[in-house]
Structures are given as C-alpha cells and as structure tokens.
Amino acid sequence: MNWDETGPETDEPTGPVFDDRLVDADADGEDTAVEAALRPKDLEEFVGQEKVREQLDLVLKAARARGATADHVLLSGAPGLGKTTLSMIIAAEMNAPIRITSGPAIQHAGDLAAILSSLQEGEVLFLDEIHRMSRPAEEMLYMAMEDFRVDVIVGKGPGATAIPLELPPFTLVGATTRAGLLPPPLRDRFGFTGHMEFYAPAELERVVHRSARLLDVGIDADGAAEIAGRSRGTPRIANRLLRRVRDYAQVKAEGAIDREIAAAALKVYEVDGRGLDRLDRAVLGALLKLFGGGPVGLSTLAVAVGEERETVEEVAEPFLVREGLLARTPRGRVATPAAWAHLGLVPPSHGVKGQQGLFGA
Image (cartoon, rainbow, N blue to C red):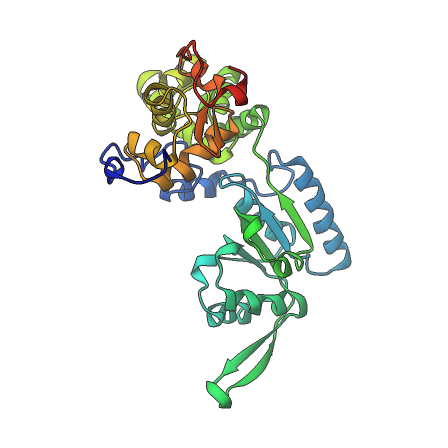
C-alpha cells in the first residue's frame, strides 16, 4: 500500500493548529520592532558568519578606497541568520542610504522601474526574497545591474517604443532563502555571493549576552548557554527566547536569569533542550507511537498530528532532519535511533520494518 495515497482516512485535519511557534525563524511584527534596536551597526559588532564577514569587509574596503560603488551582493541562507542586518551594515559601511523592498512586492516591470529610477547615486537597494520576483521585472534587473540602464516601454502593440533610462550607480543586495531558484543569468551578475550558515552554540551565547545588555536584562553564562542551546542555530530565535525568558524572570525571579530560570521558562513555553516545540514533538510522537518509527507517508503523518501536509513538510521536517531525528526515504518518513532516545522511548525489540537497511536494527 502507498502510505501517501489519500483516502477516507486523510480528510481535512481537525487537530491542534501550530500557527504561533516560538521557534519559527520567520519574523513577526514584534520581532521586526525589537530587531531594529538589537541589530549591530557595523561588521565589527556583527556576531558569527566569520567567512562572510571577512570577505565582505574586503569588498567594502576596496570599494571605499577606489571611491566607487560596492559590487552587487547576494546573501543566501535560512531565515533569521542576519541577511537584512548585513544589508543595513553594507549601507552604513558605504555611508549610503538604503532602500528596502521584497521580491513579492515587485510583480511588474513597471514596479521595479519606478524604484530604480528614484535611486540616488551609491544608494543600496535591498531586495528580500529576490527569487520571488516576477520574470519581467527580473529581466529588467539584468540590464540595470550590468549597465545601470533600463528600457521603459511606452505604448502597446506595434506602436510601442522603448525609451532608455540611465540610472546612477547603485548597489543591489539580494537576499534569498532558496538560492537554487535564482536563474543563472541573475546569479552571475552579483559580484559577491555569501552563504549564511547556522550559528554554533558559542556564537549564539555571544548573541544572547549582547541582546541581554541592550535589553537591560541580567543573565549569567549558564543562562545564556541554556537559551543558546535551544535556539536552533538561529539568532532571531535566540532573541525571541531571551525575551520570553526575561518575562518569566521578571515575574518569577526578580529579573535575573540563570540556567534554572531559563530552563523553567522554556518549559512553560514548551521548547525542550534541543529546541523542539509542540509541533516537532507531535510529529515525532506520532511517527514513533502510532507507526512504530515508520516508514510512513507524509499525508498520513500530517493527519495523525492534525496538521496540513505542507506544514509538516516545510515547517517541522527541515529541523528534525537537520537534527538527525527523522529521515526522508522513498518509502516514507522514518525515525532514527536518536528520535527514540530523545522522547525516552524504547524501539520495538524486533526492529521496525524498513529500518534495518538504514540503521542496522
């Protein structure tokens, strides 16, 4: 039987909805407001991403020495790793204004032409989620990046004419969470490409300490390490967890944060020692308890946790796979031995059908 076949048992899920996750790497309204105050202002202050910082520092210093506009920059990586922050640092380092927009907001070539034509010389244009820009706008961007010129089409049909519009030199900073979706002609026009990696726990501890100082929160080394270890390698999540732990500490512990307070606070918010939340544990729990560790199809697993298939695949699975708790196989999703250990469960003594070839069980 194909586990992913839909049938009577795969009706619309009716279970809990996980739409407000504390460990979601995407920014919400509160994050946007707080991050503005927590963002570092220069490369020296920026924590982590050592290779990208070193290479970008050379690019910017060389451009300043020449008195020229910096090369176009492409930053790729998961949400919450600092792409927007780096774009603002680039503008600050070049002493230039910055214009911020996003790919989904540019659906027509005219939208892009209006933005480009209003840029000042040397200005930084930050284009978030650049892979989601419309194709006509994308093709206009090729010429703008390379020749600092766009052709504005006036009229329609046989009477349409192209009016060339000269642009002042500018720096485009593109950010994407899915670099593979960018067409090669667009990628090739960036003079510098930096890939943002997930942060090590020690780097996140530095992020937590720095944010705690800016938020005027007292925290010791053990408390910072506890928060960093549950932050899934992402500074945005670390800052969000710090704010929730701060709230708990102000009510329960006179504002001071140590390991015990941090652990107690995050237990309230259902974020465990490895950074898994309710949705993550629900997926693992269903996989282990209902299906003996798998293999099981994605649709069936989604129904078991009362969520949409896309939510399980795009929200929960990437971190579980990265943590080595779940594997995707041609036959379906399979739990690893680490998943059994993390939930404190014992695998069936006879082994789970389909896992022997994967884990030697």
